[in-house]
Length: 117
Image (cartoon, helix red, strand yellow):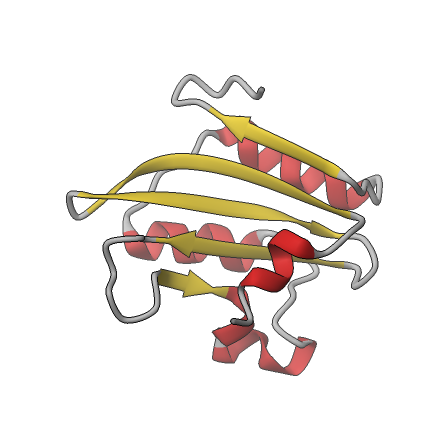
């Protein structure tokens, strides 16, 4: 499955936030892919029997020209707004800073308060 590439790839940053969407538990994963020099986002919903995903940057037609990756987090912030999904501002700021400083090999899990672990 294409989405698994993000979890297995080396040298990228992934941040996770667990929340709900339309009553279902979901996980938002955003990050910076250092080798591909772009931001990514996947919204996973394990209750979705079709493929388990609400959104994947790799299947976003607006990002197709760039191989599914974005140069800013703006397309993903817009998608989150469109879906009515709130994530901590600290998560968005952290992902953005990882891209600015070209960080790799890092994971962070955010809580509802915005604290990363």
